[in-house]
Image (cartoon, rainbow, N blue to C red; front, side):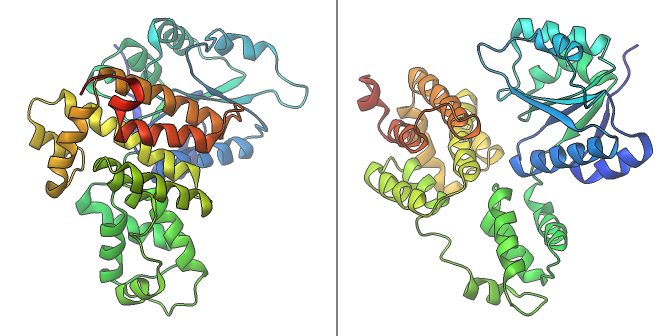
Amino acid sequence: MQASPAQVTPAQLPGFFERQGLPAIVSIFGDSPLLIDDALQLIRHQARQQGIDERLRWLQDGQFDWQQLFDQSASLSLFSSVRLVELEMPEGKPGRDGGDALRQYAQAPATDQILVVVGPKLKQEQLKAKWYKELTSQGLVVTANSPDRAALPRFVQSRAQRHNIQLDSAAMQLLADWFEGNLLALDQELQKLALSDLAQPITANAIQTAAEDQSRFNVFALQEAIIQADLENALHRLARLFEEDVEPAILNWMLQREWQTVSNLQQAANFSDACRRNGVWRNQENAYRQFCQRMPALALSKAAELLTRIEFAFKRDSGEHYPTLVTHLVTLYCRPQQVLGIRP
């Protein structure tokens, strides 16, 4: 009988490591880049505590060689008897070869490496896949999902404490409203507040007075222009973001989220229910309906390709020009028919 996987959140990882140490296989899946990074940082710290100084990071793509899972253990350096191997699966879909490789590896994990598999929040069919069940049956599963709206103020408070910030209840609610669905931007705002000289506990009024205009030329404003298919404003706001050295992780998060939202809405039987499940506000439903209508399968496929190239450009220095790729994607989101030469 297959064992049930141990499941924790990133916040529970230190306690788990204190009790059991770092297991041979760790799987991190979730929809929050911030919490995924939290988990990775904790795992890397624990690895160093256990004397593991060598780390490899792989990104699965169409040319990924799954044999590396088995070859690496035979090629350790002279400086480490165990290495940490991080394997990112951007879509959580290893394919047939990858699924077989993961199942084979999970049945007999290498004794000289720790495997960390990282991916997005998985759908039900992925959770039922044989590779997932085998991979997680004896290992550790870290769920890195954004808290729901009701739990978000408590999350804000917890995150603020990490930065030695005290917030009053109104300030917690304000930040929750501002940054729902974008925990990376929330964490950046808390870091700014930590460096400020505001009296603590910090109030909502103090934040509103000190903060920059959250609606001007930021990723949320760009997102709104994309949803409305307002290409002129979208490109103008994108240019401003590049001038301000926007954090690529935040910009990529928004662009990927729009792709996923449109994909989910197009597949839904009930559009309004799907909007609620995907965090679309009621006053945005009509705009998203039009967004879905103007993005046929060909456009979504091209957007997915661009998202992958964008990821490679800023994470792996692929040589492609990151701003150009992002500009192409924003244009595709707003005017897919013109970009691809297809009919509406």
